[in-house]
Length: 481
Ligand SMILES: *Cc1c(COP(=O)(O)O)cnc(C)c1O
Image (cartoon, rainbow, N blue to C red):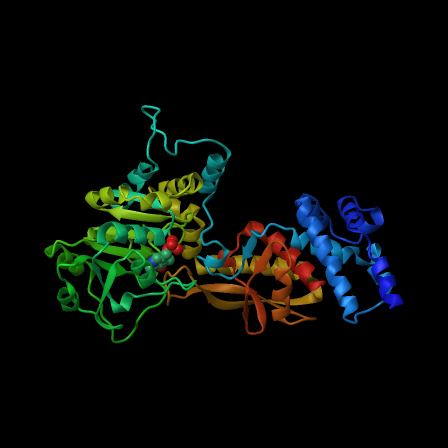
């Protein structure tokens, strides 16, 4: 018992720990990296205090549970490095930077699209000051945010009108709530998709009180299937782009223009949820054909809905483009208020859309497009440069090689299309690739990659040259642990 008490007495007071963390002696400071101490100093005091208390609570519990009873191990000096690292981690912001080495271009878990520099600047300016979000520039009175981006959506989609909302799920909700409430919407069974995060399109639709009238079979739906399902309760036909999978083999879907003709013959609108909508025809760059927003409008869709942060490459947003009379009804829906975007997203989305006025500029400036379109030879060059840098930095701690492989678009775009790339493959000497991957999760920024053939691999497709130095630093840290 006495050694237990000696242990507990050796534990420094919370105030003493806080003092040491805020202004460590030279000897203590030498035990931890400057970034750890800076992170602790910049965190709110209350979070650091709670972290210190939790640290010692866990130590006390470990001693009680029969862990080491060497009081010297519990002194401030002996525990300082561990304590500081723990406090830095526990009190850090939850939203941390990630270096995306996975090669997945639209990586939903890490925030989807990276903004173009002009869009990021627009967000910054809007954040730091006031702006004309709901300000009528002519009269100085109140304007509407819902008209702000109509010009760009009209121009780029070739549509009569357009608005932007919180995200594409909100766009789907609004369109159905406005146009179809209390009635039925006809949809093909082949298009009842779940898009990840257990978000199912049918669930969103049904939450608006709209009945889904499912037609056809999973792999084949014919025009006659749609036609038979139309009755006096039908309010619209909807098409959902099956963006994250593709049915191959014995499969048929009705072409969009024929579906539009059918809808119009019955006085119904055709809605098209494109998911990862694009204003650029990727087929020109050798990628499989994907419907673009302007193409869908040309084919007769009355409303086209898409995300702002998937292939478009902007901030989280939902875009609704289409017929002016339908958008006029959506503008009057009180739900629009609940699903509206904030000024930061408007700023980012407008700057992104403006780049599309010159498609070459969009392809150069918008990281999502650039990463989709980069040549394999350029990726091989970047992989070689990264490999050379890492081989220098990591010396013998790790073998560094190259491997031909492929990247994925992600975000539910181009599901079965593999984009050729060259990976930098790391095989540590002293630990497994899986262990390296795990250690990198503890560092900041987090570096993520993928495990292929017992190697931790980095794909240059989603890495910027400016990140190479930090990647080398993080790997050095992880491999010296
Ligand atoms: C991604 C996706 C959505 C949801 O878009 P968010 O912008 O994430 O709300 C809806 N429909 C389809 C077909 C999608 O691929």
